[in-house]
Amino acid sequence: MMEPKELALKVAKLLDDKKAQDVTVIDIGLKASFADYFIIASGGSERQMCALVDNVEDMLEPLGVFPKSIEGKRTSGWTLMDYGDVILHIFNEESREFYG
Image (cartoon, rainbow, N blue to C red; front, side, top):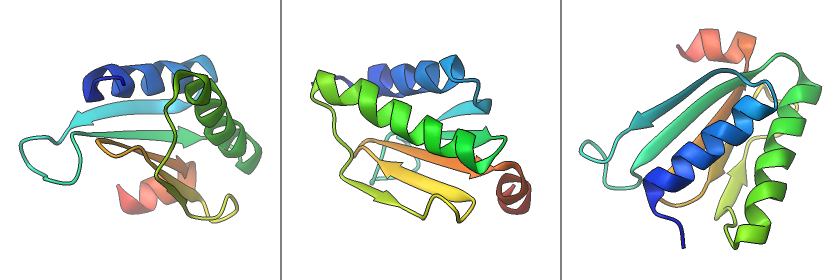
């Protein structure tokens, strides 16, 4: 099992490798009891957002790391992937601007 920080950095690298925009890792461990890290990234299009979600899932699965849940439709402009101590938010550019 990967440590939360190791997983967060691995996810950020996977996103960066697929040209995600504005990949940000935020340590929330001291402020929240439900997770240690938020990762926020943007995709330039619906197609790229889907590719980002699929790539993270496909690359972590062989390592025995599976999401507890995935929320948001791929056409909604936002997807959340819950890996327990690491939560990934992928936004389209418009949604990310809106939620700041």
